[in-house]
Every structure is written in C-alpha cells, then in structure tokens.
Amino acid sequence: MFRIFGYYLIKATYEQARRKEEAQKTAIQERFSKEEAIWTARQLQRFNETLEQSVKLRTKELEEAKNTAEQKAREAESKRQELEKLYNVTLGREVKMGELKGKIKELEEKLKGENK
Image (cartoon, rainbow, N blue to C red):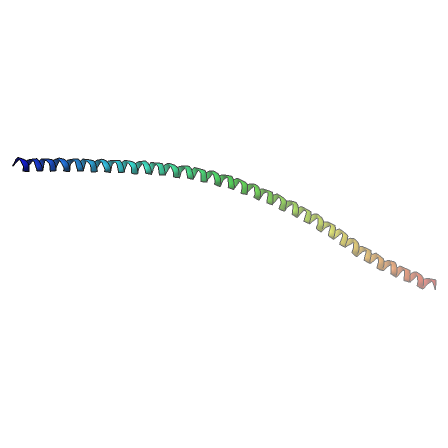
C-alpha cells in the first residue's frame, strides 16, 4: 500500500513539476514575444523616421528643381519675346525697303519718261 501511495505521490510531484516547467516556458515565451514586439515596434519607428527624412530631402530637391525649371522657362520666354520683336522689326524693315525700292523704280521710270 505504501508503494501505491508512494507511486501516486511521485506521480503528483512529477505532474506538478511538469506543470510548473510548462508555466515557466509559457512565461518565457510570452516575455520573449513582448520583447520581440517592442523591438519590432522600435525598428519600425526608426525606419519610419528615416523614410520621413528621405521624403523631406527629396521634396526639397524636387522643389529646388521646379524653381530652377520655372526660372529657366521665364528666361526662355523673355528671350523668345526679344527674338520675336527683332523678327517683327526686321520684317517691317524688309517690307518698307521693298516699298521704297518700288517707289524708287517708279520715280526712275517717271524721270526717264520726262527726259525723253
């Protein structure tokens, strides 16, 4: 009878030790999971901050490029207007010269007609 009692006592002690060990494993796993979650959250925060800095830098670069492009577009438009004015002046001069050549020819013919 003491053997049976001893057997059950050993079995109960073993079960209790096994449950305690499982509880400790579970606690360790939960702690590890929490620490891993905290580490992951911190890493994500760092990545997010790095990404935000990269976006700000790129936005600044693009803004500067846009301003440069707009300035060059204004300069090109100004030069185009200058060239257009020069073209119109030159064209007007050529038309006027054509008219004057026609009048000169007409006057020369008139003079020739009077001299005859």
